[in-house]
Image (tube, rainbow, N blue to C red):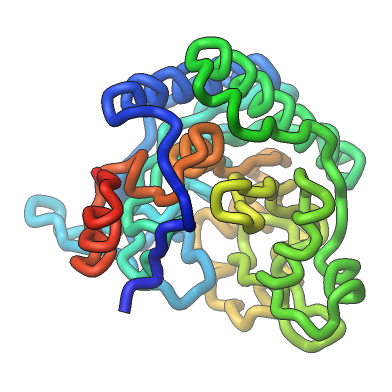
Length: 337
């Protein structure tokens, strides 16, 4: 059964041709705004990584990689899930200094993703990482970076609406960020699921940074899964907007200040992944070789969905969908790429 749906009365604001033009505009405008805001430079990114490096993102720890052997080298490779750990290694390899960072156009395949209006097996992100000082590993610095990213998104929306006036019929994004921790959210809505809590809170506070994701809450379960070896679970979060088209909370970015030796050791123990300590990347963190950093991923198709008001990620991204979803949208006179 398809998990996708067509909202009642939904019609796209732009035709198919203008949608493609608008996607290119968003990707150019936002990348420039992000670089200016965070002092980033673009670098080339890998599509796959050798399994032995420990650099691939294992997401919630249960998703399967798309993997293959390389005939000429004998190595085993995995298509990336994200570049969360690779970017920090790249900061060290390229000798980035404090206050400067990198971004890359990341393309991934997540074969176990549950397909619906928001999710595809193909993932495209602006993956970014920036060198910070150990003293900047604090909540105030994190909040400042979040506000900068939200302002860059809202500035992109403003320019986009000037180019495509038909988008002005849709509500503008709120640039005022409300900050709340996952425990505070659970305390507000103890009888709701994590997703229901997000929806309830975002209906009232339209732009939110939901902090401290990964560790167990007082209920005994985490709000959501987060790998133990890149974000510090006490200094991370998700940027969420209220999606008027879908009438729900809508994640655009997962980000955070990265683990230091102490937080990595603690999180590896809590998650039962002590064996990772021996991997090259983890040794680099535990021995203080890799720089302190902050980073995240910002969904390219997700941002296009939000700014264009589309109902399905397949309207802004070419991927593979189940036949029932294709039929549903075809019968509604809508086009999935």
